[in-house]
Image (cartoon, rainbow, N blue to C red):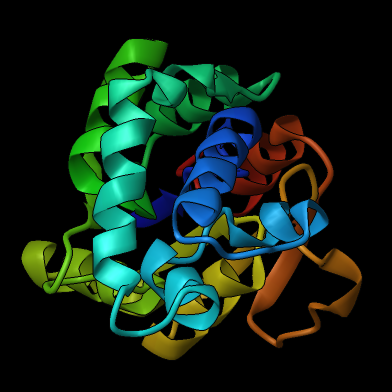
Length: 216
């Protein structure tokens, strides 16, 4: 059995517009001047890390709550959209013999669950591990939670994600990684040894999983 875990922001969904809109409002609220060109770098890692760096450690979690209130309240959460081919990727991987699909994300657990349902792809995901503040926040922690909860060995898993956070999180728990080249990652500077494949499209992921992990 092979467990294939997918990242959310930048891998399953393009959350750029909604996240960047609320980032701008959050930085303005805390009177913090941040170059908008940097915003895409903040999509994927825990917001608390970003706000600690730019707003201050003492205000970071308050800023996270401010962001979350606006993100949901102003319906910016619904500015997300699936990348082309992702619905096929999730369904086809899910339907392969010997494959169990999951999502491991630093997006809030409830938000990820809701959006998967809203996108109509929830049935293609068997395991979900998302961010829970003060419990599990980093990619390493959400992956480790899934491993522990379901009694899974890291060597039986592969992480599919678009940023160094996905790669390093997988590396820290002993997991290989498929790097997706359609999201927000700084791909040219990612050379970690656990990156076993670089996928240009979701269909590349389908073929790689089918050829390397599915039971034929």
